[in-house]
Image 1 (cartoon, helix red, strand yellow):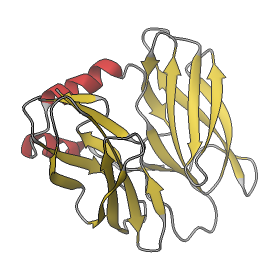
Image 2: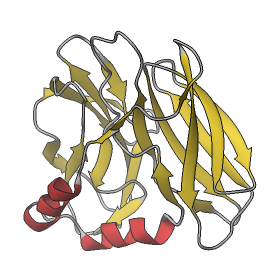
Image 3: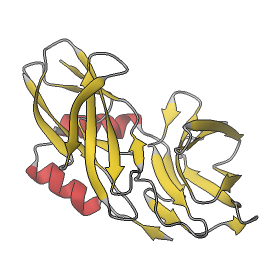
Length: 225
C-alpha cells in the first residue's frame, strides 16, 4: 500500500503561511479518536479479494477513552452514498467495491469523533482515479478566528494518485450551501476574502483533474470572533 504523505507540507504551511495556532489547538481538542487503517490518502492494495469487483478490508482505529459503541461512517465518493457500521470494538470488517474512492470517519458515545480520512480501494484495469476530497488546513472547520479580522486566507490540501490535478473551484458564503466564489484556482489557497465580525462562513472545494474527474470536499465552517 502506498501512502501519500502530508507532514512536510503541513509543517511548511504552519511555519510560512501564518496558520492560527489557536485554530490548530481547536482541532486537537475536538478530535479524540485516532484512525489507523485504511491510511489517509492512500492507494489501498491490501485486504481480501472477494471477487473482481469487491474486496474486504478491516477498518481500525484507536480510542484510549473506551467510547464504545462506535459508528463508522463510510462514504462512496463516486455516488455520495454513506453507510453506517456499528462496532463494539475498535475495528470492523467491511466488503467494499473495488476501484472506488472512499472517505471514512468514526464517532463514539459522549461526543467523540475522529478526523475524516480518504482512500482509494484499488481495482483492476483502471486508467484514472478521482482526486481525493480536499481537506481544510486553515481555518480548520469549526474554528473561530480573531474578531478583528477583516479578511481571511483559505488554505486547503488536495491530492490525486495520478498527480494530474488541474484546478479547484471554491464555494464560499454565509449559507450552509455556499455559492461559487472562484473557479479554476491553481494554487491550494485563496487569499484576502472579506469577512465581518460576528458572522459564520461556509466553504468547500471541488478538485478537478485533467481527464474530467472531480471530487467535492465536505462543507467547512468558521466564525469571526
